[in-house]
Image 1: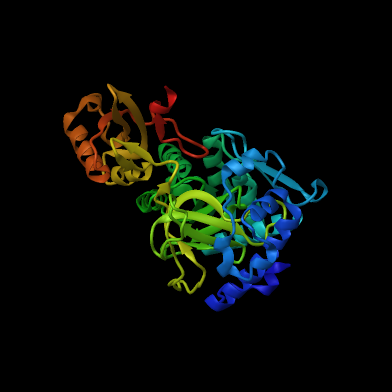
Image 2: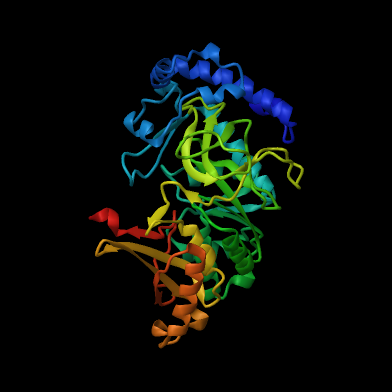
Length: 432
């Protein structure tokens, strides 16, 4: 297995040498097995021999989600169907689903990467892990499941759909860790609190991903449940959860960069940016067999550092995501990310982190309404129209976004909870 030739704390020189070796092998592999890449490289006048090491990666073409959709369903696969043992796919809500395939070796690599992440989160073989991601075509459930099994933990494949049953089992089984989206974990904390079960759980850690969340939201989760919460990152096109995760210091997500080479580029010029600067995250899958991707544009906005972490790991770290280049809203000429609203609301003690942004265009002018859910502790029959709280929220939102928004306070538990990726934006400008 590949893991025998790597170690957790390689020097930067060792890692670069390994990445170079794998990139050279990858380029030759896709050139001869994926017609899409062969045509792209030929169009640029590139042959595999031109790639000598990782420093030559910028010579290679980018890959986008549209490329996967245009080659739907199996056009980018590098192995015959007889060697593909599993299929996953995106929901396809913004177009054709993106389909990915895994060889048996790919699944071994994936499980190992998730196991690394769970180890960073302090999860081990003595733990009981509830997996509350969706199972099926979505990569979250089976990805977390395999990683937990890899470390020898007891796995409770709970999935989503029944929060009361989940919390009952959490108490009855003595679950010590949970894997789910951060917004769903906040919902779980509410169910536990309303059921008077917060003091009955044995939960000590959570590994949350599948949607962007803020440091303040992490602190909110940790405070409510008295646990440590870790950020896990991945996307189905690259592998699934397990591409990166943060350690106990929460100063960036450690990338499994022996398998996924990260770059940060300017989303407009596509030129590399300096280390530490914000840009779009790009990944190359150095070892994937089923559907290897070169310079895949994730649309996620972050920065990268390769300094040694306080935990002792030397792997590259990506910062907590600011948002996505395609999730960014432009409202009256101002760039707005939902994560900015989330961070601002967590400072307002009277409300929960649940919100909905509604963007509309009235008389050719953009209008932003933010529906904010009041915390049950502060709810009274009169609070729905209270001006003082409205003005308080309006002020913090304007400070955070740089624009004024209409604030609508709604009752506790009235905004829809998500058991998958939370939806925080309704942009009606796109519907006309």
